[in-house]
Amino acid sequence: MKICSKGTSGLYGNGHRVRFNSDLKYPQVADTRLRNARENGKKRGHPQRLVTCEQTLQLQSEGHSQRKIAAKLGVGFGTVRERLKEE
Picture: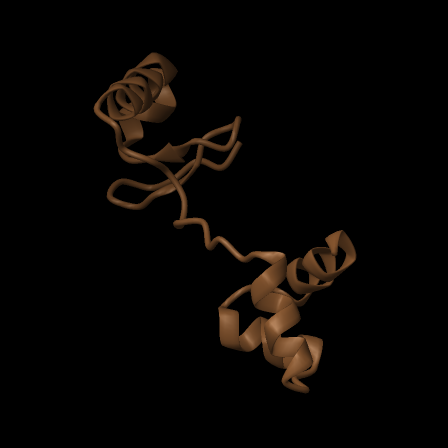
């Protein structure tokens, strides 16, 4: 577990974000904050990008490499490779 000095954020033992030192002393405080956020419809992490097989096939048929397709769609090379395998 990473212990943070006052005013900084870090990771709580199970991957939750730490907002305050009290979250380290009282883990139930962090759990309550996360539960309340979920109940209010807030999502954690970055937004997902939806990439379809059709998009990747279209760009591939135009002659783009898999790496250029990944850059154009804003996803990783592995995502493009997986979508092309699904075809």
